[in-house]
Image (cartoon, rainbow, N blue to C red):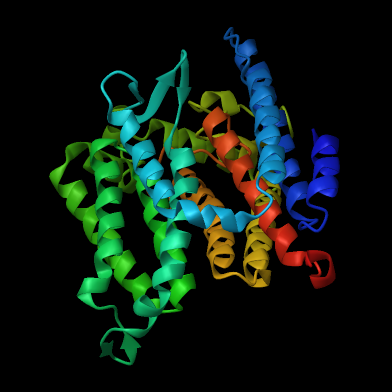
Length: 392
């Protein structure tokens, strides 16, 4: 897979960022090894699983999608023509799990659809569509959003009429949190929009207003809706005996104890007991890696994510086209925020969510969507780094 990707990039995107692909492949390989190792642990307990084999197939399909993006999308600027189409597709992706026939509820969250007997998480693909929509919308309206508005304490704040897009995304994020019981996707989508809004306008006031709106909405949802409040209770009182016995925080606490047993250098690959944590191969693969590779190994893995996000931001800086800058930055923020939400939930920094760790965790939707992001970043970086004489 690595060789095919390498030669495909050399052939069709020869000026693409040379660091991005190796970092992604390293994460993908570590994830495959850990998932297969968990298969062996489950087998020792009499539970036969094939998560590793299935994940290899998803990895191959994801890599094929990345090559397809590089091959078919010769100019990323064509995506701007589909700004509002992408927005509609993103909304459809969010609504699909609520449909009565195809929508499926798993572990209390209604974020899945069933297609041909397979579960699919459309929000993973919706985030890409929303990034394209946000980039197209913001590049067309950045002057109005950046220059107009009253000054308060030396900081320029947006006018109420300019807050329409922010309010719309805020409402959509709250609806996802309330009706689909998916705090992770809610936080991810709203965070991507606020981050891209800041990149487009360079106004810190948008970040302050956005964070305030989300915090207020989250508190209100936790107060009015019991299923949202129970997530917050499991987060704030995870070690409370009554909360633990109810099962609300059992998974979180087991993951914390697993990482604690790993210490600084880990128990050693294959020497821990990650199988004692529910969904160790997907939602809690970070705690599985933390147990066997220790804090040192986990920091190395997080450094790979930092490299990927840094290269995405470097690509955004190098692009001369405003749409490309926002698109590359938005895709980088999508990966960064998803990693923060997952690792923050597992380590109890924020409430636990149902998102998967990009390229590491078991899951076909996440793997395919994130490889598409890699394909887009490679194409954008190729055009950004291409010399003028070659470009001409």
